[in-house]
Image (cartoon, rainbow, N blue to C red; front, side, top):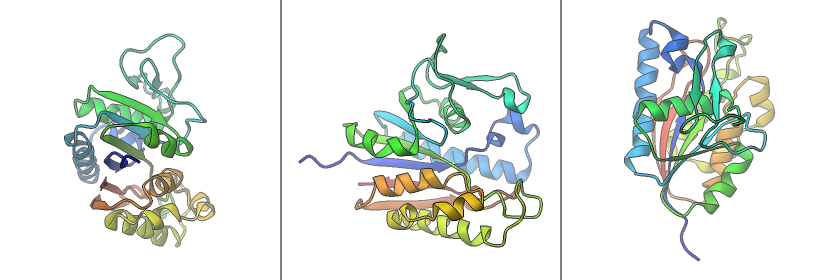
Length: 230
């Protein structure tokens, strides 16, 4: 049996605030977040993956590729972002996590292959790909971190996000896969299905991990980390 190919993962927020068209003038906190995300994405690309797999919620069993696209009209902005290559008539509409990831990859100058999937599809995709693989794991922490957060403040939000960042910092696949989905739904931690999927898919691997960002500047947890799994 051949060993599994190396996988490099960038854990990034799915927030549209990463796009200047949505955020407008950047704050200091947003600039720090964007710099951390840029570092994480570049780490993935430095390993020259044959394919970058974008995993995020909202795929509903679809796989995204050339010709698919998403837009920001839901945020009042007339901007369309191709997922890969030119948009084709009849292409799939990609959800927000995949749109943000496509923009990050374009901004980083990535012109290689990319594939968008949902959390339930990640393990199968990684098992099928033969070469070095990059993964952009898109998801936010709890949206109930402060009184001004999108959701009502919940004192459990901070400890939940702290457990996530501890797992990301140490490369603990078991802890990531074991995150409580019921607690995540209550705390509006949108990234949990993706994080669980990454932890499960890389179970048993040796992981070198680095945490690049751990803050909730707008009341939402935005962890940023990279994993190199062998």
